[in-house]
Image 1 (cartoon, rainbow, N blue to C red):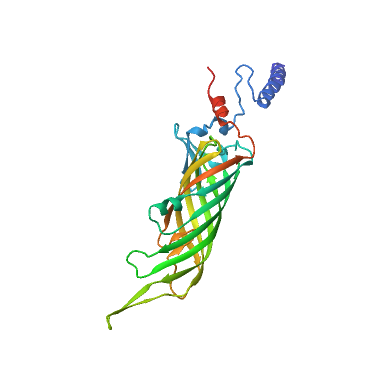
Image 2 (image 1 turned 90 degrees about the vertical axis):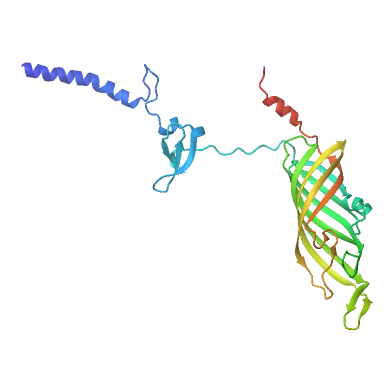
Amino acid sequence: MRAVRLILSLTAVLCVLLPAVAQRRISPVRPETGKNLAKEVTDTIDVTRLREGISDEGQKIYIDTITGREYADSLVQMPKARVPRMLQPLLFSTTLGVDIWDPVMRAFGQKYGLIEFSGELNLHNRYIPVVEVGLGYADNTPARQNFTYHTGVTPYFRIGANYNFLYNSNPAYQAYAGIRLGVSPFSYRLTDVTVNSGYWDETTTMDFPRQSCTVVYMNLMFGIRVKIWGPVSMGWAFKFRARLHESKTPMGKPWYIPGYGTRNGSVGGAFSIYYTLDLCKPFDTSSTKKDKQPSP
């Protein structure tokens, strides 16, 4: 009878304890402590302390710089880089400009170049498509050369775009990089070409007939622009030039290319004056800076 009573007692105790144990396994929260028993490994990962590495098996891993613990790439959710929001509207402004670099340089003795005009459409104060039209001219006897080079007044064309790095800053300032594709169809003449004959000890002067040529070239630009008064601004730019295509001519290659410059010059400059017409009211970027400042 004692054995029967012992068995019945154990059965009763198990009937009481089993539901409690089962309930504790189901619930991930201990009421007395509030700790999460079902916490995942990733819940304790501080991504600000991780650096990327490679395991012995060649797999990508992340290493905690404080504890030295290693985590598989699949366990870590690294935050994605946040793309800055563009504050200014799409149709921001349009601008007309005139490059006075060549007129100023001609006043100091340069024998080529005339003037250039540009038109821009500013999108978000960030992307700026550009069209440029100019007039080229040359009449010069290059130093240590035996000819005079002449190109009449000739138009040239360029298209391209600028990227403004200060697109979310004060619109009165720009720091940009740009690219241009230019086309220059023109003609030129070589006159007063002197030819020395060593045998006869004589010098002969001749003129070559007019030559026609078309040059396609590319400019890479870096520049700054600053508003000086109302809608008027001024800016400098440095150009790196390269010829992409040049038609062949029977009497030699041209010394000067309208819109490009001299043949051997791969670096140039620009100094322009601009008039800007706002297409909408610019967003006040100073208000965003005030919002970011902590309140006292």
